Structure formats: structure tokens, C-alpha cells
Length: 167
Image (tube, one colour):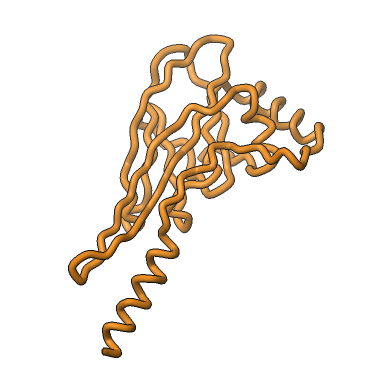
């Protein structure tokens, strides 16, 4: 009986830590306004540094960085509440995120079509969940990308995130 209670307690702890939570996708709190100077700095950094912004506001697993690749080249490892800015030539480019093997997270791939004169905002997604069945535990992981708003993302970055230098 003691073993069953211990196993049940462990499962409750695991499932509580791994509840399926996707990103808030750059939600902007309506009750606060970040200083305009911070928004202006973010916009200046983006316009100076590039035309592609990749954001990791929140993506599980939270303990590991997400490795970001473009056209097979590693750009950076993004932690929670970080974003990177890079400049790409116009055309179609392959984006990939991968996680350390120990994280159990899946790899995600997508394409982005860069158009001259446009800034593209892409969010990283990651979720994990645990479920019990037949005396065992099953973990499910998923990762992906989401297109973010060009209008609201710079303001949202002022609330949540710090710019990460490229590797």
C-alpha cells in the first residue's frame, strides 16, 4: 500500500509540473504600459539588426534552451523570455528548433518566406504532458512555430523578453 501511495504521489507531482501549457503567444497585459523608451529601443534594435525575429516567450520544457537553426546553421540557444534578431536575404529559408536529447522534446521545422522591406515575427511553441495508464506513465511532447503579429509583438517584447545575442 505504501508503494502505491508513493507512486501516486510521484505521478501527481509529475503531472502537475508537466501540465500542457502552450505559449501565451505574446499576450499584452492591458493594465500596464511599458515605457515608450523600451519599445523604441526594441524597434530600433530590430530595424538595425534584421528582418526576422524569433521569440521564445514560454515553451516547454522550461529547463532547457531551444536551439534555433536557419538553413542548417545554428543561430543561438534561446531560453525562456528571450528573442533573437537576424537578417536574411529575401527568399525561402528553413527554420528548425531542437532541444537537448535529455529533454525528450521533439524537433520542429518550418519555412519562412522573407520579403524585402518586411519584418517577420515567429514564436517558438513547446508543450509537455504526462498521463497515467495501466500502472505506467506516458509523456507527450510537442514543439512548433507560430506567426506573431507585426503590430503587437514589439510592445509585447517590452513586457516579457530580453534580446539574445547570436552564437
